[in-house]
Image (cartoon, rainbow, N blue to C red; front, side, top):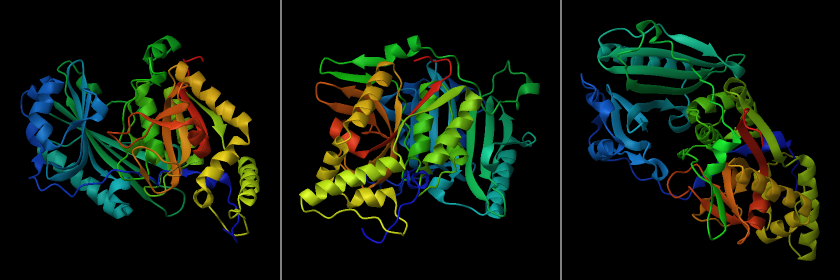
Length: 448
């Protein structure tokens, strides 16, 4: 790898362009399911228990998320609402009955970007369809502006016992650039006791309830085989898009009791569907949400330019001893992924072990936080060491560390790729070889 220079790590550490080793099947040949037909004039839909819902609607493509019985998801299924294709649907249950249906009508990660004219036209058509279905015009649209010129527009409808909240996100940076983000429709029961004057006053974000260490300790499970695992971390499937960082953020928010979906977070983090989220974008978005939701964001460990130079020096010394090609940086641009891809895995492990103090700090941080019931966001170069199930390709990725096993010398982690990725494990040396960063995101009420 000669004739290449080194870019700043803030730009290099994009996380997202690595996919899980699971094939995506062809589009379903089943007839589309018209979800609006579920919204009858009575409240029968909202009385369904999880078992009743799944018995009635599993054929529509719904499956439980990571073995839970409080969140079912349907993706890549032939679903429609008022003639509009539904890219993804989620059914959430609380207190033993259906609480909401969330439909993703558009997201940039799966469908690609739209021009401003095309996005506004699509939103206008959606509003017209909902007006027609409800038999009346929706509420006056309300817009809120966040950091980085992110804009969220909300509008609501009511029909019988049902309430519909449409949320559209787009970003308007300085200049002429425009980025479409998502269109989400949330359907819930309209309570008879709701104040009509407050019907459309639903806040965009609600603070987290106070979480204490005593709330988290019971979530830590210790097995006879030596596993120490943080349980109850919700699964979020990023799909085949570079949303691993924002999906991790959603999982953390939901773990602490706050619902924020990955598409809204992707807008705040300036996520690229293919390239993922840079470290800078991820931290900026986490800090913005943290301010609104009462969260603290802490960098526990981060790979710096100095760390990279030391790694290259150690690696090249080992390469010379073993008569293997060295990694030489020139004047042109190079990504961190390209550097890791060119390295021999066995030599990389040895090189990382030469700085054993940092490795010990990594393990100590994992032990401390897992014992406290706190998952850690973990930035890695995935695909460099063997994993089960296999990972396709090599590139920046973000996942969650949720456990460890000192008897086997393993780090336990989870990926945002759905079923089969809830609990996985790597030898400590392999985990340290690919590790780039650790972040802690916790409620401010939590004292560790």
